[in-house]
Length: 113
Image (cartoon, rainbow, N blue to C red; front, top):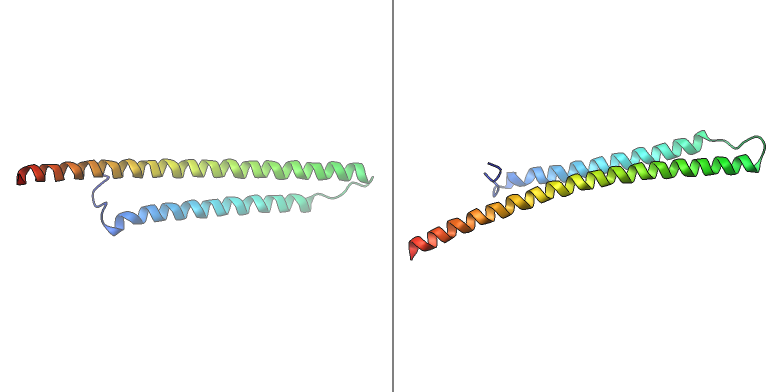
């Protein structure tokens, strides 16, 4: 089952691998968002007629940057929710193993008495 070999050092590797994958994914999403914002800022140029278009251009870049930030935050939330679900599953597995172990100890104590 899920609990088989849970006390071996190898049982802890998937947890470390899972956390590393989450960190790598988060870094990639952040890098992608930053690249998009930089590309947007370089692609925009001031209007020919001066300040009103420059201000509109600036606002458009700000809106675009905020949209990218929102997408990054939503993706981060998704990753954190997945991590939370995974950790909750690990806690449930550990609690089940603890209950099973407690039952075995109780059985042994009863046999000794």
